[in-house]
Image (tube, rainbow, N blue to C red):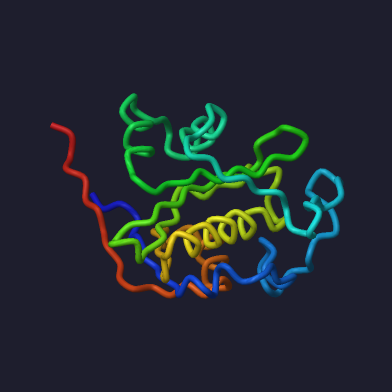
Length: 184
């Protein structure tokens, strides 16, 4: 059986590291920009007007829990796989101590590429610009590390993410399809 097709997308890094743009919140371009979160709380931002994102050299336990929830669990070796890269950062967006959005960035390919992966915003925190803030923070780090382009992989069926990445300037470089053998 075939799994959903995956898009491998790329973008020049300078486009991602640019200052925040009010038009790039986590909302579709034809939707009204929210003035509050889904629970009625006001939009949250750091001192410069962007949501507060920190980058760590290793994932926190709650970071791993969010990644495991999206992936349906992580095997014991996953922490090693996630961290066994020379240049890696784990993005965290916390509000009042609660982790609401995560992402992982690696600089690879002779230092030329920023790989963005495991981008996740908790459902109750979506549509508040948090995904854009995480991607931009990773892009600024990648640029400081010498990367010039970014890449990511996204399932074609994840239309919200595909649209977000399109608005950030990503285009599809190629696609692939994974097939799973039937159980014996």
